[in-house]
Amino acid sequence: MTSTHTNPTAKHGLLSLGVTLCIGLIWWLIPHPALGLALSLLPIAILFVLSQTFWLVTLFIVFSFFRIHEVFPVLYPLKFPLILSAGALGALLWHTLISQQVKLYWHRTYIWLIAFWGLVIIGVILAANRGVAIAMFNGTYWKIMVMTLAVSWLITSPKELSRFSFLMVTSGLLVGCVALFNSVNGIGLVEGSRVTIGRDFGSMLGDPNDLALVLMFPLAFAIGAATTKGVGGFFRTFSLVTSIVLLLAVIATQSRGGLLGSMAVFGVYAWRLIPSKTLFFSLSGIAALALYAVAGISDRASGGAEEAGIDASAMGRLYAWEAAYKMALDNPIFGVGLDNFYYNYFFYSPHWDGVNHAVHSTWFGVLAETGFLGLGLFIMFIYSLVKCARQTLKTIDSQANVPPYLLSMALAVYSGLIGTIVSGTFLTQGFNWPIYLLAALTIAVSQIASQFENSNPR
Image (cartoon, rainbow, N blue to C red; front, side):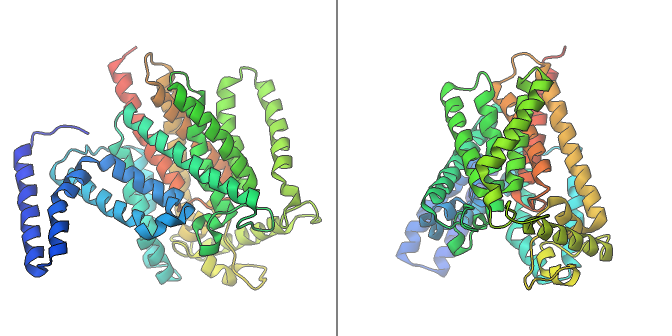
């Protein structure tokens, strides 16, 4: 946030006049007593929305990404994502266009991100199944685009970073606890052993791989807070407990991509904390074998040890990846379109077993749906983020008196990026929330760190 030279009295007067005219028009059209009560509360609601923009945006992300209303179905009828999105977007438009309290800035990573978004939008228009692409864009992707920019511009201080981190860790704990409860009680299991949430009513978390992705995201924040000195004692303990719950929940999904990503997240912190790199690699190997054994992947109905040679799960991915490559060959510039891989699988797969399949790979998913050009832009976008995150860590490490939450978040976004890159082999993340939230936080943390660098020259 930043102050401007615009007269605040004029802004408030404009807002009051607009609200008064709207209330008068609505009452003239629908003069109902119940409406009168609602209209009397409208000014208070508007003032609340405009003063709590950060919380509205953050809570919208929590409900959209963690699917809290699906984790706890009793909340579903309340339409929290819709209400929060309306409030968040209205507040963002006001503070960006009228009050100008949100300071917009340009970051070099936006070059690759916006170029990729532009290609995706053109691909929606030219998609093989335009209806599916438009539905995905209107339903989810445009919100991801807006909120990515909003988060990167709204978070401007270590205090806001700490609040965001707390919400991520808390949300992760809630989802992790429900996942473990379902696992223990045999609720919604896939293949007899893989945990899910909300599978009976079609929740996104009803796929164990997608659930693993949602669990892996807050894991980076929880470990960051638990291992950073100076973070409050309660929050460090809370984050440590959450880390354990999240790891156990990821194990319960038996997702290879989730386990690989979680190991990568732990690996980033272990690399910084363990001086001996020989010991680091030795412990990493032991941890990988232990996780594989504990997760029970060898006992899975698909991809288990009982399947000879290359298991069915692996072969299914190979067929899907080959189909993705063929889609890109036929559509090298724009791909088959957003969310179109599944619906084009029949036409490009070398092996048809009667049903379409997901791509189960971030890289091949982007390749199929945006072509070779899109994959190139996406890779440059990821490379730019990793480079930015590494530079931010170097900046923070070289400064004295850096707030602990800034270091915690810098480590969280960097480890989260590495986890995303590693897990991208088996998880489809190219058009989902995590990578874009990490991008927004990477940029925000970089901007805040640069302020400390400028104020404490060496």
